[in-house]
Length: 541
Image (cartoon, rainbow, N blue to C red):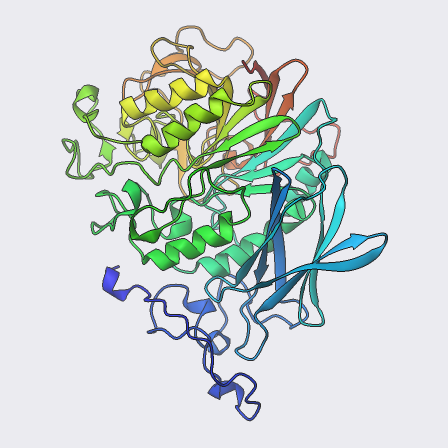
């Protein structure tokens, strides 16, 4: 879609607030902008839109507070309030209350942003030693209640549920996930990206995501980071925020208006701890890479798409698409050229600094996707790719720099995006000398499945002897990176390979246990079984 058709956002508060003689059809939107094809369901005269397949936006006015999502870091609570679209005459003020001695006490008011309909509460000097009930209120009747958990410093094991890729091929609720995750009761929940697949309608899709999953993060901290589909692109090589003009954006940068991108990131990441370095990238697009310490575990949160170089025009094209390599005889060194970026210098500096600090803590790196090519077949079994430049196996020099810093920190790596669950021991210079990486499965795997399926169908050296999976061991990916495949979930597996990860971090033994649960398994039952190859316990050092 041409950039000229994208939304030019101009905020104009109504001068006629309180003019009760206006009929509903005569109301003017609080967003004055040319009608466009971005977020159309939630802007301008949104109430005049017909039914849509994503979510009902015309809720009762006692239900306009959709959900809240929060983290606590450095004794600072950051809590985002997400609302449904408001009518012009409704207040743009939202209030935060906490419960003290059985009574509700208002502690803060904030203004709602009409782009995305969210607001951020920031409360410093937060008491992390006790559980605290909170309530978000709008007007007299609308409210949403939850619990800010105390910091679980007294626990020997900290657990985190990890999910990714909430495809709109299934718009149903996620009852199985909610039941399972709440039964397992992790201390933290991580959504690695692609919470929304409705590219140009993020607000409606984000509200749908909240309806599906809010009962998993109502009472526990949550990390959400947007990936390519969230900001409206099939793939993203952010290239420091530049404008993309090529179809599919292989030239690098962002296709849609920066205010749309900023809205998505505000809704999904404003509640994260303050960024390490808040300096915006090009077009004024912000950053959110940071770290969160919870219960003695230090989580680094990366933006592995935002600074990455786009392939088009920079490397020799190896096929009909700039990002797909189908020629197995190409020279991998020919595409690892000077000047190409993966995390970028800013995030490498962050990882370096993070790795040197808080040395007593267990450390975990969270990102959107994995740092290698972990799939051979894409979309359908006839579509074998030798290498996919959307993966973080490329550029190889950038991958190596990132893995060296993760390894130096003694961290493990958790990611999503690939629609293919894997556990891989990364190789930097030699097989097995890098960090452990767990890429979790897709929430819904009906969108674009992937397979780990070596063309020669042979087991690698040093295979995993604790599984019946046929293709484990040492391999080179399509970029000649060294990887040791320990477990994978192809789409023929239960639930079509969809599900979620659970990571248990033992502070006493300094071990991580990776669990991988199929979507339709009921973990409340004694006979619940994980995917073949899981659970797996590894050392964190």
